[in-house]
Image 1 (cartoon, rainbow, N blue to C red):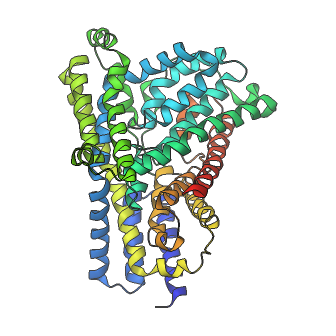
Image 2: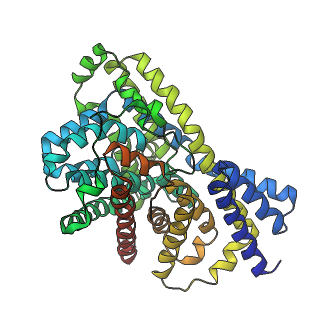
Length: 473
């Protein structure tokens, strides 16, 4: 088959999947499988080879990230049962004060809290953050809403153990420890710079309280405030309102018991697992090959240690029933994440087998800058079409897997560029957009400024950080 025919059929497969998701509301898992089937059959792989490629691609990516996603989701779900998130927000407020709350919360949400589903974070943290908005200073609502939007979305696709970041690393065969270290180097400056840029815009008249804010009937959102996940939403495959309500599910006795546990102890297993992963990556870079470091620094073992530690702390904090509740919800919510990641691997395998990598490699110059911009642009266009951060990042990565070796760029930069592009233009097709709009008392116009513009600024800043890293590696 000619190169042009392969390119056309690949474009048709991707556009058909997008159309099925956006226009006909087909679940992305089904839409991507249909796209993979079409691509395999239309490029002459044949029925048997197409099915084998799809199933092998699914299995290969599950080998890479299956346990990582499951352990991370379970850890976050159990951690949520301990009430640690609300206590962390209160601690940040007391430590850094209201005026620095947007920055401190943004850093916490985008890094350490990425095992928690974004809608859970928003529903739990938003009431306190909103009450603090007047104390933050001028345009407090705009600043805190923007900080939460930027931090949540950036963390999901760029910071391990965010589900998008783990999926991108697995698909592009980037060691998770390396993704963690380089993701942190991108996430921290991206969040701080983006929040500062948006604050500058707000102070120059970009925010109009009269038309961008609305009065809320009550301080606390009701349980139904969090929209249920549709996979065409923000793509984070969130826990939904049922999981978000778990913060208030504990009894009064459990709440009192919870307050007796030091906040650092609640987060210690999670932090320890991240340090072990980072330590394993550094040991590999330095050539230190001690077997015990290779064992505990392995991401699967490190997250298992974190999960066991989180369960142990939770048992003494909120009891076995809360753990069982968290595990049940974690298993329930990890299913769709794993399926979405797996079919992304299926599409990647089909694209590679169809021969797209060899063809597209000819269209990229030897420059180490332009390809990253193109990677960013592919993910950005997919996100504008689909409205899903994680889905667009995974789909972009699946198209880039066969091309990556020909670019002459470290795969971690390709993963970060794809994740950065997937952030561009979060808009009304995203469930995160509507959560932020309702929970922070914004009008739709206000949410377009804080969410759509704010996260798009972060997308561009993140690309800049990735290109700076490209100079040194």
